[in-house]
Length: 432
Image (tube, rainbow, N blue to C red; front, side):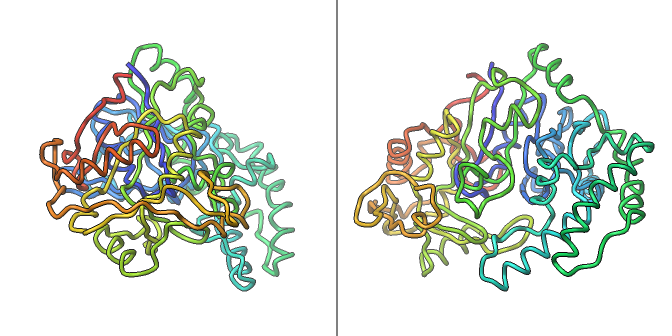
């Protein structure tokens, strides 16, 4: 039996929500280990749709323990609002089913405001990153700067004012420099105390909870947000998120040793999408891209922004397989390609006249790479709703097998619609 880490192998939006929900039925514990409420997961269960941003996908499954690890940055007001929204759909959530690491850093209103100030300034100069303006980056900066307010601080009213003052010394200097008014100490204190009573019942020593669960032989599912190419170290920097999104972060962001991870599952879309700014070698800003976007309903769960669409990029996914140590992939949205006469796959790049098989790290080189395509025959039959290989058109099977060869990893699961049961299981990740 193996504990499983789920990560996105592209720029996010690969369909992690459905796959994590599908796997969570086999898991005992589901853990979010990085990111914040800038990441959206959409689950469709028994015809009911759940849109989650901060809560682990396991919360919609009765009898599962959900955990938010310290690698996450936590917006308390967004958390309370999401709890209310999911409870209104009939899901029971209490401290017995959901735990938050006591050392998780908070996102406050001043983080959201700073995020917006910076993006506005960058937009005027043509250098914007394309953040969700939800305060994720500034909150991670404060964590690294050792001035963050953490959830456990809400339980210590004697030391909280001093920590707020330390935080405001930094932020008010930034606000003055950007031409914005300072934030009063009383404003932040009121913001924190207004939600403390609702949040404190959920905090726990998550590292200890997970250690006990692991020793008891319970199955743990580690749920990543965003995708490998948005990783702050290994992504298309600076057009990335502010955390590590790769599988190695599952250990650090939840409080377990790396030996607790048994299987890494990379969620991989059958084509490629991206939200926001940054390089995208296989992007199709044409009728093909419009077709993929419309057929795939490519709009961000959190932001509603239209996703940029393009052909499958085997170079990027092969690189993600290596960086994450991916054991197998869950290939999603194959049905979006139904009906195309031909399908292109990017198999390499041309950079300054040289053929390369990797994405270079520098921003300039990433902008200059030109995709090299292989053209494959499409299929006219339908893959939508298929639950066995025999239900798939022959050319669709060939496409899947060719992707496996190009990326150097097998398909463990194949998703053929948003419905959780429309999934072909090849390898059960929990069986190691």
